[in-house]
Each structure stands twice: as C-alpha cells, then as structure tokens.
Length: 104
Image (tube, rainbow, N blue to C red; front, top):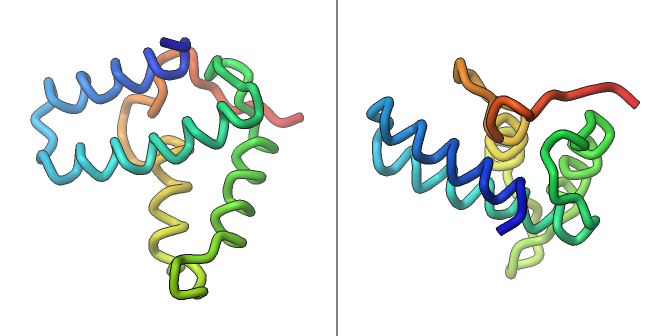
C-alpha cells in the first residue's frame, strides 16, 4: 500500500468515526479512487508532493474525459471531484495531515 493509499484509508476511517453518511463515504471512496489512479499514473505516491499544479492537471483530465455516450462529465461531477480532492469543506484534509497544497 502506497503512502497516499494509506492516507485515503485513514481519511475514510476519520469520516466513519465522525458519523458521515454511508452514501457520502461511498462517494468519497469513488472520487478518491479516481484521484489515486490519476496520481499513480504520474508516479506520485505521497500526498506531500501533490501541488496545486497536479490538482489543476487532474481537473483538466476530468474536463476532457468523455463518458461512454461521448458526452462530457457534468459541471457538478467535475466540481465535486475536484472539491473532494482539494479538501472540500471538511475540517480535516482529504489525504491526512501530510496533505498540503503548495504552489509550484
């Protein structure tokens, strides 16, 4: 398990401990798995090296992604995935205390 996968697992435990709804947690599992896959493809396995530039690249990849029917993801889907990846509204960062955005 990579450090980022450990951080994601710890974050999901944090959500359960704080009584987040199962559907909310399921959505986070899905969205964070997309982000984890994106980072793995770029050989990024530590949340400490995720920068704003990396998240902007992720956002662009979501924007250019096409569904099976050829259509783009909806704005709300892209917005939701990026918000979860960047920390959303929670008091805890999405990938644990080591996750800090830094400008390049």
